[in-house]
Length: 276
Ligand SMILES: CCCCCCC/C=C/C(=O)SCCNC(=O)CCNC(=O)[C@H](O)C(C)(C)COP(=O)(O)OP(=O)(O)OC[C@H]1O[C@@H](n2cnc3c(N)ncnc32)[C@H](O)[C@@H]1OP(=O)(O)O
Ligand SMILES: NC(=O)C1=CN([C@@H]2O[C@H](COP(=O)(O)OP(=O)(O)OC[C@H]3O[C@@H](n4cnc5c(N)ncnc54)[C@H](OP(=O)(O)O)[C@@H]3O)[C@@H](O)[C@H]2O)C=CC1
Image 1 (cartoon, rainbow, N blue to C red):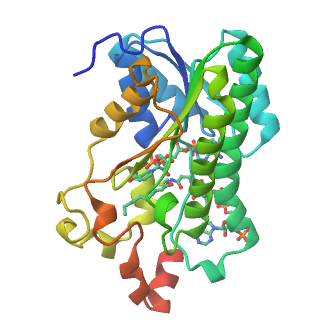
Image 2: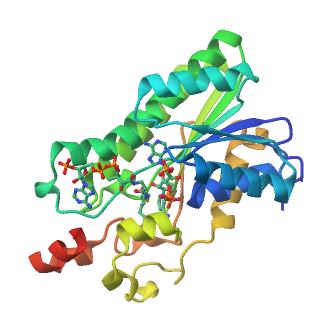
């Protein structure tokens, strides 16, 4: 168990913090004393999560509607945030993903994923880093990757490409910004059920497969397990860790790898039904 004030005095922006794993991470940070800014495209979702976290923890939680695919929108959001005071921590969590045969993707489909996952994380990271360096403030950036960032994954190639790019950013800026007291770290989660990920990536057929065949620990991850790792990594207790990506996957990468290889056997009819 962590000391209850592990993140006291820290102000954290969680992109995509209104739902799923972003919401779980944000909630845990608030329990540990942080104040929060949540961003996403849907204002009503953000407002509901902000109210829920404040009610449960008493933390100050602001919501910022922002499509992080737009560099201008990210800059404007950061200006609004900094008017209330600087951030200490950025969590690059927002993402878009779907299962598809890569040869059939339009360029707009590729952009939909790359612009959110890679460009959005880059815009947010640079906007924070620029301000921290100008102000002589330390900072920490945590990026949520996937196993596919480390080893690729069939049928989610744009996501794998984008997350691998975010890992490269993490390692590059850990070196470039280390002398400014800015740390960049990442986590690569395995399988953590959320409505968003399951809707996009878990068609009915995939849900039936026994977990023990793909995950040595025989179960999905719990949100609290991921959130606790994410709390440690951004805390001052992890002050000497930078440029590192920590895998949290129940051993999944050692048993069948990152991707949904069972989909290699799918027929055209199955793919067409999924897309419909
Ligand atoms: C096995 C257990 C799970 C392991 C987890 C693995 C790792 C998880 C990684 C994750 O990232 S999970 C997060 C999932 N959450 C989301 O994806 C939420 C956000 N998603 C979205 O907003 C959309 O899904 C989006 C498509 C990514 C973006 O939406 P947007 O409104 O910007 O795009 P659209 O206008 O709908 O479409 C743009 C473009 O893309 C084409 N397209 C969309 N979906 C598909 C698809 N399924 N297959 C092929 N192409 C698709 C769409 O047709 C458009 O192209 P054009 O038709 O205009 O050419
Ligand atoms: N669940 C899992 O098993 C795994 C998840 N991950 C990663 O965890 C993270 C969270 O995924 P998860 O919680 O499962 O899925 P969700 O779909 O719940 O989360 C995605 C979030 O990103 C936000 N978002 C998407 N596009 C944009 C955009 N253009 N601008 C701003 N916000 C955006 C969404 O909000 P809105 O639609 O309102 O914009 C949503 O809150 C992702 O990075 C994902 O890749 C990694 C490995 C496994």
